[in-house]
Amino acid sequence: MAGFKRAPLVALLVLPPPLPPSNLPSPGPCTCANGSTLLKNVVPKNQAVELIKRREKEFQQHKARTSSVLSTRLYAPSNSPLQYPIQGFKVRPMTPTFIPGLALHAEQRRNYTVSLKVSKGVLRTTIPAARAKVQGNGESRLMMESSSLETLNELLANVSYTSTVYHIHTGDLASFQFEDHEAVFPITIKQPQPPVLYDMGIDVNSQVTITTKTFLRYPQLKVLLRSIRQFYKDIEVIIADDSFVTEKMTGDHIQHYIMPPGKGWFAGRNLAVSQVTTKYFLWVDDDFLFTKWTKIEEMVKVMEANPELDVLGGKVGKGQFYSSLIYEEGDEMEGGCMYRKTRGKFHSLPGYPQCSLVSGVVNFFLARTDAVQRVRFDPNLKRVAHSEFFMDGLGSLMVTTCGHVAIGHQRKTKEKGYMRFRKPAKSDAISKLQLHFFKNHLKCIRYG
Image 1: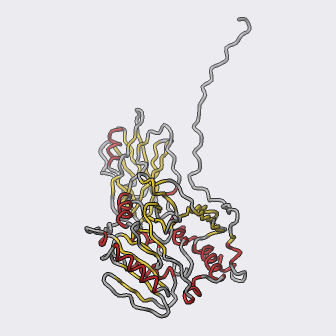
Image 2: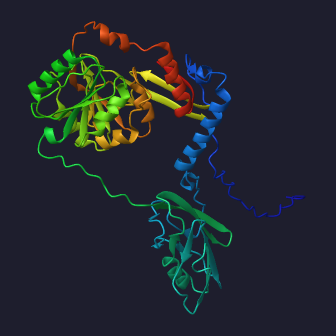
Image 3: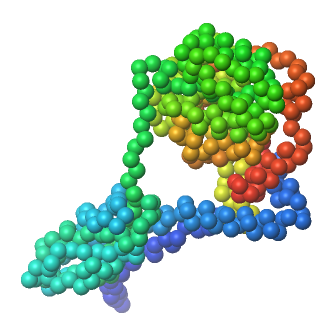
């Protein structure tokens, strides 16, 4: 073909795309659900400036306690000759530990040079062989060089890491380099924790303690206790009581703790749970009623089969009350957005179609004692409060609700002494919102 000229061959070098940034981006403002309360609006204007300063200081301290370099995004380099641990490398503080899996897989070269660098510890390897050179042994940057790949990998197999900072749970990032290749892998620095185990004993009496809080409702409390003894005559019952005029509850397997008058709902819960010595406790209100459907053994059975569960709720009467919590962290200045969705659930508990995973349940629940003690009930909440405990426990407590266990509710009676305190004043509701604004670092909240 006359006039046709062959185009010259051009070698195209295809470069890999740049890696995304390794630092997690700061979350932007969250979106408040329709009908939410903007919590900054409930803060007194003459206190707002100083209160927000104190909230910011506490939030930064919270971040310092809970954040770690281990949350840094790491990306595996493509076609890398470097071999290294990508997950699960854990060391005790200030304890030499061999780094598993370090190796170099490279084509033939006259010489091989690799380096390792850390920031919270030092690196060591064996005394170099005749065909190798090591620089920085016992320092934060270690370089190894050899003309033999086999010798170099022997050195890498004997590299140890020792943290130089004592911390019970933190981390380090190790940089591993060869020529133009670099890999970064995490090192978890953690003080091992001894387990705290509960002896389950031989029956429900050594597995569960029943707890309740009472205030000016002794007739209802006595009915509750009689119903408990009808089905569980030897189970331990703990009563926290902040009544103004007290009446001693006596009997076998009853612990009655008298509190200062009017200390409140959550203070009483804390007291009762603090005295539990069994693996589980069953929380009930003082006007509940045990029935043939109040099967504590069945609740224990589900919890024991699912060790990751912390709280299991049931029905009260014919109603099954539960909720899901939808929470966005939001930005650092304004805070997060919380939405409590009544009867919201996630999915059924595997193997138990009668149970669903949720965020919060009603006042009839079986709970792991140690898990609840870690969250605790905020004693600032004196009267109407319940969901607030599950808000504090969000991300810490695994909660389920089951429809095959239930407790009865006594018929409501009008008691003038009690009803005077049952309904909170408007100031109590505002105080609760102010507490969410500061303590939970919330921008807004909606109860749906």
